[in-house]
Image (tube, rainbow over all chains, first blue to last red; front, side, top):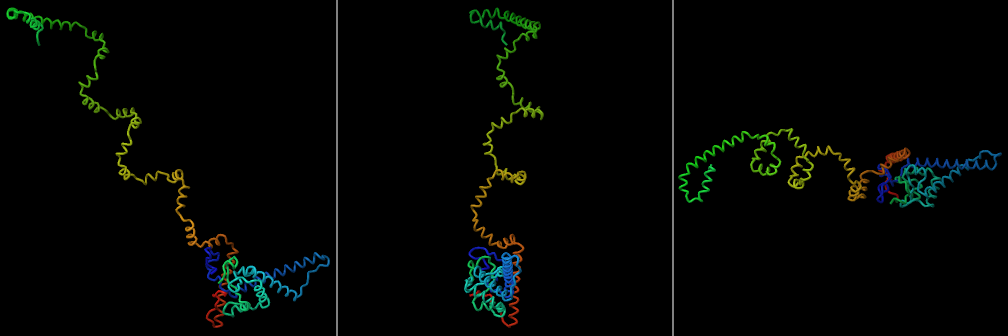
Amino acid sequence: MSGGTAGGGVSPVPREARPYQGRRAGLVTRLVAAVLDGAVVGVLLAAGYFGLAGLLFLVDPRGFSMPRAGLVFSLASAFVVSFLYLTLAWTMSGRTYGYLVMGLRVVGRGGRTLGLTGSALRALGVVLLPIGVLWVVVGRDNRSVQDVVLGTAVVYDWQPRGAQDHPHT
Amino acid sequence: MTNPATATMRALSPLSALRPVLQTVLGPTVASVARTLDRLLDELIAEVVRRVDLDAAARRLDIEAVLDRVDLTATVLYRVDLRTVVREVLDQLDERSIALVVSRVDVDGVAQRLDLDAVAKRLDVDAVAQRLDVEAVLDRIDLTSTVLRRVDLKAVVDAALAQVDLVALAEQVIDGVDLPEIIRDSTGSMASETVKGVRMQGIEADQAVGRAMDRLLLRHARRSDEPNA
């Protein structure tokens, strides 16, 4: 159990939260985390947009006007940024910014952090079918559609260190 | 008392073979003459005494020389009842006299000559200690300053620490107190408290939603408790 003392050390997890460590997270927490991640993606997109505008202004100050982004381009950009963001975050630490705030972690089979392939597949699934998260409340195991397909899970994990320090068995 | 004339006669008597004769003839005469001489002698002495100025004679007397020839100490010791004299003197002593005597006594010198070790050996220290009011003695002593000044506190602390298993003690303390909780409380910012609250509320909301869905779908319970395998 990751919530208790492990390896003779002391747990930084508050006492009241320890019973939940390692359990699969419910819908509300995951939605809040998803909203936060959506905000992060929005900030990234805005940064990219204004970065592009600044670049255009430097190239041609006289003929500069704010770049027009069509709906398709915007959506495509959002998909790509989301995919890259989720893939990198899950590969490196198993958690995005939203997951970090809400104390969640994506784990694969055996409780290990996903590899690059697993992360990319899951990110693709999430980006293409965001509504799949609602299966969390429909199914009995708190798993989204992507989790069911890929054999992954989202668990409560308030430990600040990586999943390698306290593997979920 | 023997008459001098008679004595002279007795002295001469062995020299005369005619003693019985002479004694008979001359005895009464000699006795009469002797009595007369005795009487004259007494009168002569009385007259001499009457005529001599004894005061003048005394003045001419060398008293020092007389005293030199007399062993006064031996005379006093032999003739005087010293015990009675001392008793009389002591009876006449009053407190002032005694104080005067005491003031002239070198008490320190007396004390230096005392064998205090011998005195101490005869002393029943236990009995003295039993009569001692230890609390009163302690009240008059500033024990704190005494300890601070006289005791090598570092040595005491080192000795005490040497008998303590500090590691075991520390583990005991850590087990007794929720150290991570204290660290969180002392260092935790408002932000971390807020995050903790949001996370806990999220968990509670998850469970509430899950229970609601279970009731809606007529299920007993979900299996989110099981670890991911």
